[in-house]
Length: 391
View (cartoon, rainbow, N blue to C red):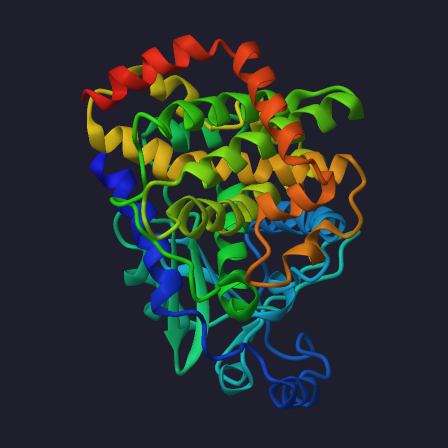
């Protein structure tokens, strides 16, 4: 894992704690002002999208329709200020605030079959946004005139690393990553639902030991297969495998401050939910089939690990993206009612929602754990763990 990729991941998580988007986007009062101003924004001076902008916005809208089927109150695309850099000196400003509306030029394209966005040009936002996404990041979370602004840049090709290249395998990198990061903005705006007091970002203290790492290896592999099950009996079984492994990890947690839950379970919620949105909204709408490898390249990368920091990068962080998203997908496929609403409490984790749903006894959890250990060759996982711990 390159240092640059890791820095991007840590930078994104740091944003969650630094901003928490304390200022809501358009207030009801602002919306009333905007409605008064916008009688017909295209009546006088307006602009149109370029062909490449129209193509991108059309994809964004196609995916947005599918998101409505996955997460009911994720309406950030149509509610909050967003700026998309589309060319070196051009961009699209979505959902302007009342204070910025007068300085914005409406973009007036008919996009057939979709409810149009409020989209504009705005030179001040453009100049503010450009330096925010310089370097390797394609996105930024900033505050412009006391209003949170999500910035996304589609002007550059995806980074040349295995993770980004995998995400771009169907050419949809800038669509899927746009929505993954936009979901983080949604989480931050609703931080009272997503961030509990005991959430602990503890990358270097998360317990990776001879007792926990074999179970983490098992969890990683089990949840890869969980994406490709063909019937509900299998889905129930794999959900039971997941619960039995996580339950054991939580029981034996040697960290002293319950980091299996307060770091790991929380990351399954905070990173698993945007991964779920990113993967399944684009899969079901623009055929972005990244679930061929739910780890987005990390399954192969694991075979090349050669340092302790790489072990920690995978098993203290990356694992939770695909395990969290995989469990949500299992429960959605099992017709769990209103899965998105189950997360509207800061203390409701992916594991605890699944555990409550299955209602397994302690003996059932223990027996299931022994079953999945046998299925996935526990002895080989222990040997692999020993090797990784020796690095």
